[in-house]
Length: 270
Ligand code: KIV
Ligand code: NA
Image: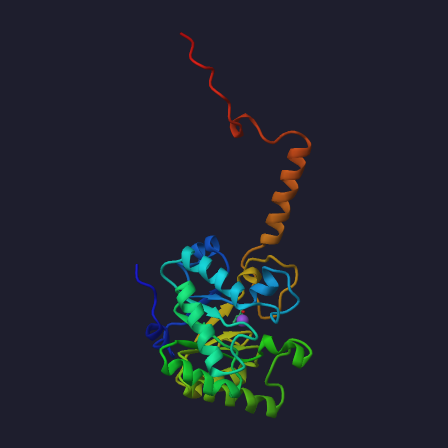
């Protein structure tokens, strides 16, 4: 089976919506693979898998380890791996080296960078050297400390202009696709109309060319989720029920039963 390619995703502008979910491990990637165009190994894994307070503590080694797992578990979807905080901002050469590590060590088809306007030069540098780049504009979680929290963008004219400038700069730099996070519908629509690069929204309205959500939010693993999430399952309740049942069965010696037990055969006598 051939994976969905970068040109195939780039060609989805104003076409069939791009379906994307995050994935961090092989079995989940395998379950999502038949349904998704893109599996994103997001640095959100720092928060939703490793329990960090934000994504600033995520390392390139962590991204590569999870990227390898997602590649092993999937076969059809395009796999994109986030470059984590600290691995790409210092120079375009640093970004190139980090991208090469990701692509060579995981086999993923593309990298994603959080892209303010200042990253346009880096994106162009990578793209010219054969690295497919997904941009990420609007709310950029790796800037959480500088911004003092996760805040939706585009509430003021200055902010709207800034996000629009990011969209145009990163599109012109050659990104094949751009994630727009946490912006009002009117801004997402304006951006999606103006640029020829497909947009994938998260908390950015139905105006985008595709949608992405964090898989643990979709599955209802946490009790809190942002307003823009639709919970398609209640895994939290399921896991709690399973653990409670196991615990009470063990304590009451109801587990394991005979069918769950190995018995040694009687040695054949002669
Ligand atoms: O890290 C992540 O999961 C992401 C998506 C939510 C876009 O960057
Ligand atoms: Na991310």
